[in-house]
Image 1 (cartoon, rainbow, N blue to C red):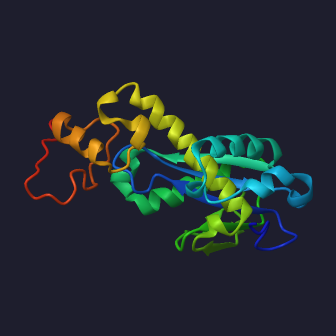
Image 2 (cartoon, rainbow, N blue to C red; image 1 turned 135 degrees about the vertical axis):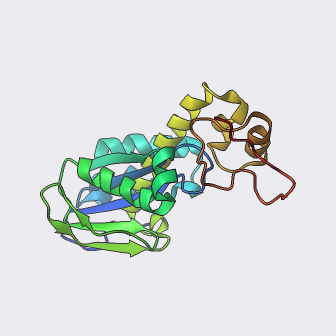
Length: 214
C-alpha cells in the first residue's frame, strides 16, 4: 500500500504527467490534494491507488471517479504540441504541473512531484511553495499516483477524440506513442497538426525520410 503523505499535517499536492514520450498530442499533468484522513475516510480509493502504468484501463477510469469524488482538490494542466516544440518536453511537463497547481481549489503548502526535475512554483498569490521530487513517486505516494491516473486518463480521452479526425495514425490504440503502426502512418501520410515536429518521428532507420510539407 502506498504512503498517504510525504509530510504529515500539511496541505500536500501530488503532481505527475502523462505523454512525455509521445510523438503526437499534448502533455497532460495533474495535481491532487487528498484528505488528511484518506485511509479511513476513503478506503476503496486508498487501497486501489497505484502508478497508472500498473493499472488496467478499466481500473484507471474507476479510480478517476473515486479521485474526483474524494479528493479535497484536483486539477489538470495541459501543454500542446506547439508549446512542446517551442519550449521542449521537460519544460512543458513542468509547466503543465504548474498550470494544474494554479487551478486547485485549495492552496497547497507542500508539493511532491514524480521524477527528479521540477521548477520552483509560486502560487497565484505569489507565495513560493516548497516541493520535493521523488523518483518513482507514483508508486510510493497516493497523491502522486492519483495525479498520474488523472493525467493519463484525461490525455487518453483527448487522443481518442482526435483519433476521429485522423484515424490513419491509430491514436485510439497507441495514444500518440512511437508504436510501429504510428510511425508507418507518418511515413505514409506525413504529419498532422498534432505531431511534435521536434521529435524523432521516424525512429532510427536512416533509410526513412519525411516530407513535412507546408
